[in-house]
Length: 182
Image (cartoon, rainbow, N blue to C red; front, side, top):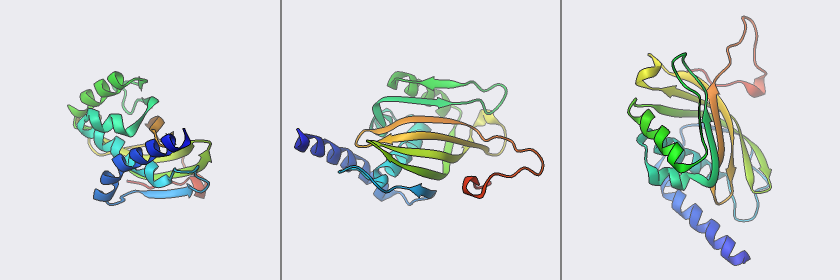
């Protein structure tokens, strides 16, 4: 059984590795990636996140299937008054959302991810800082942040995204929470 599990994890990493090899790392990795369970790595989590945002942009059902765990939750908050909150717990729901947003030329660009260490088979992701652009979101990028978890050998298990909070005049985030500005 253990050998079968290792083989399955190895195949998952193999499926994600071509994308990681073809893409230069354009976002900043922060935090703790140590303590991975046997057969797991933060680089597989990075590859899964890259695959997810690329597949969302093009509504690539095969890419989304490879990027997310069998059981997952995706949610994204409202960035504009006319925008809607979306939650997807199944591949048909996620693909419907991706296809709808692809028609608006939506693009999520990850800026930085803080890894919060491994807890069992899950690697905590957050905060995740990103930019969101789309035809129906006005001019210029919308700044966002979120959190999630990468599940070893399975893909992204949860991803919750929303607009970054507005800070009061003179208010600052702690240095360890600071995020890149567009």
